[in-house]
Image (cartoon, rainbow, N blue to C red; front, side, top):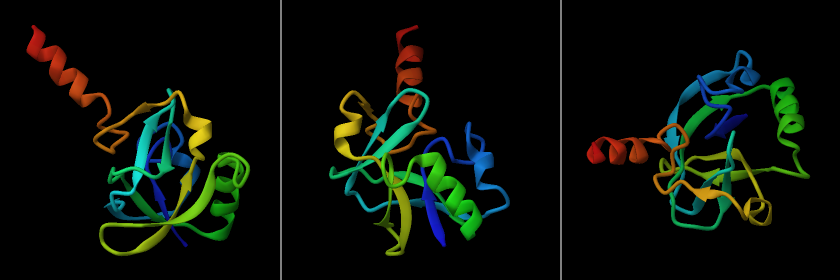
Length: 127
């Protein structure tokens, strides 16, 4: 199955190794229908909004998917649902219900990896 990841499961992030030997199919962006929020050590993608979220798509097998479902708390915390990519493809992703992310800071650019870049650029301008 194809799985879209956008936060701590990305290559090089804290939980990227949980994808095991899953094959990276490439970078992708969702259609602009979501909101990405920073919850501290990880983000959450929420349904509704106008952000195109950046991430990676992996081909995962049933064992990896079952382990990820348990890690993400599917279906009680995060829900694994189909999302549409800008390419037109439909893949699964973990979505957090909006009520569980009320205190998250919106990541306007839609990229967890680039979340600090605007503040770094602003700090450089202040020098």
